[in-house]
Amino acid sequence: MPRDNRTPSPDAPVYTGAERLQKVLAAAGVGSRRACEDLIFRRRVTVNGRIAQLGDKVDPTTAVIHVDGERLQADTRLVYLAMNKPRGVVSTMADEKGRTALGDFLGSRVEQRVYHVGRLDADSEGLLLLTNDGTLAHRLMHPSYGVPKTYLCEVAGPIPRNLGKRLAAGVELEDGPATADAFRVVDTLGRTAQVELTLHEGRKHLVRRLLAEVGHPVSRLVRTSIGPIRLGDLRAGRTRRLTNAEVAALFKAVGD
Image (cartoon, rainbow, N blue to C red; front, side, top):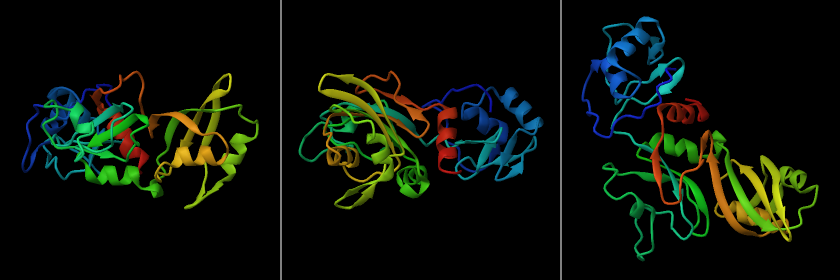
């Protein structure tokens, strides 16, 4: 796929009906119209499973477009954001009780109405995805797609050597068994330790309940990744638009 990782401009036009393919690609941030024509000419673009040709017209709201085998979301109405949720913020866009919610951090910077993908409890922090792409959001949340989520946790120590094997084998909780896809000790600090845990389930408070059940209650929890998307150095309370490459990676993660 082209190395241009720009996201569509928030001021990009919204198309209705069919438009020339190179115009749609350019509006989606792939590159200049001339560069997009070259991609089409070199047979690097497919539309609905068919190799595209110069002169093709598409409806960006319905066409399934791939560039170099990676899915491109060409509908400029769709928004994909990463957010670093601070501790103490509830995972709703607005809160009836007046508590600080996700929408309080967006202001007028995002014109479209977006929704959070999954949740983090108020005492947890870290990566959340916000989007108005309902189909992708559903797939990212559904356990059948197996999208992994990684958490950095501060827990009571010391950590026994066999804890990773125990978590991988499965721990019985009140609502059924739970397993960790990956586990490692990041650091030890006296009677506390930092551990990294990866799961693909999304049951309520699962990370906290799982670690508490094995004798290591969590005092701080930060989600650091959802599938291919990483929190990185995004500051608490800030959001950023996902790049085309990141959106393509999310589609790939759910088998699209």
